[in-house]
Image (tube, rainbow, N blue to C red; front, top):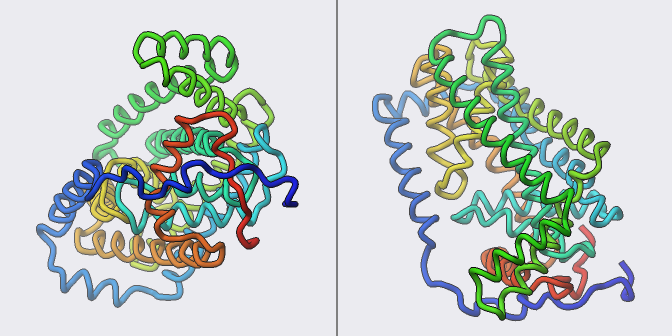
Length: 375
């Protein structure tokens, strides 16, 4: 990016720490409490020494391959992000998108309250001429496509011939319920994005009735910027492209899970890996401690033990070993990019406040000033 192409200063960046609430937010505390409770559930009737022994006895080359395969989707996510961002700015580069993706997932692994989504949006605006509100809006859309694919693959797995009867009906009911909620949400988003002027007027009317006068214009500006970030939904070709990338992301993750089965001598078909990956993805969408510990292991244990009849200690060993195999690579890659791009850890920690401030301000004030070293 040339000096002439650089955008104005991020207003919130110069206010790091201003108004920061001390301690953990309630979401972080609730997530930690839930993680602790679920870890107790996971280990309540298994011997830790036996689990550790099974992890040590795992087939390490296969576990390493599984770790590699579970890292590949971060590059695939970066490719998909390019399609989502195209209506906002078609010139985003792959390497910055990949760096920001890894920074975001690293932050989720190390910080509470799912700060990574905000860190990822903020990092992109440090590297590319995309507004924070548009960047964050694109990630909301990305999560929508993730949910579509996860629930879709879950329904396919449940309908697959040979899927065990144990728990199948219960999971099918949950999946259908989530699919209905998702369909309503997607339809609402489609309406807002396809009619941005009308949507903006509706938002302005609601803001006029509920917000002080000084905030109404900011809310309307932020809504317009967000709808621009979700503009990919208006392009049928980009929607199909994003869906195909989403399928590639989640089927690759399913393949990584299946290879992980072999590493721990778990005899289950590929469709079991797809099913397990889906319920883990749904589980970790709940509040949790950093790294999703507890939710990940509980979902894996329930899926393997209650549905596929795997012995509990073997299932827990797989859950913990596979989780750690995927946890460390992206965490180290994300930390590398934080250092390489000269981000401060304080910026990562406070990215939620930075993004929220930028969205409230709206307009062009949330564009960054300077471009750090190229990733």
